[in-house]
Amino acid sequence: MSKSGESPALLLRIYAQRIKNLDASEDLETDGILVLLTRNDLSATDLAPQEQRRLAELDEALVRRWRKVAKALPNPNFQDRLHWWWFLYEGPQVRERVQIEAIV
Image (cartoon, rainbow, N blue to C red; front, top):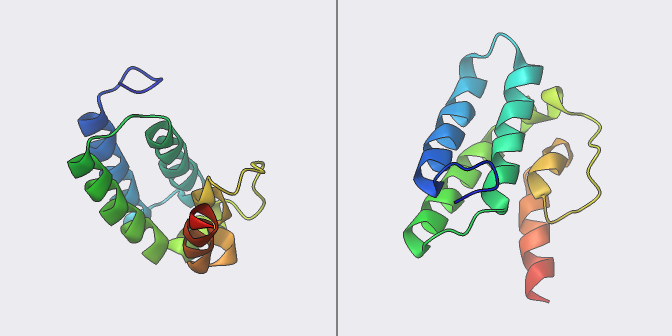
């Protein structure tokens, strides 16, 4: 269960839909922030291995839309680089850098 009280499966469905919403958004700033906030909820949720795999797939979909996210949030308020999705304005490589740093 997440901090917001949503089940992991529901959060993943919400995250998937919010990522898709970026493609046809009429309000990219709002849709961008909503997808990032949903990703925050997922980062604080215990996920089963299958859910972790689904999250990785969805994260790839989000990274492919990094330019749209960059338009929505050019200046993040977060300092924690582990929340890499708030730093997508730097480009898709930001996720990979965080993953490499986590291994070291």
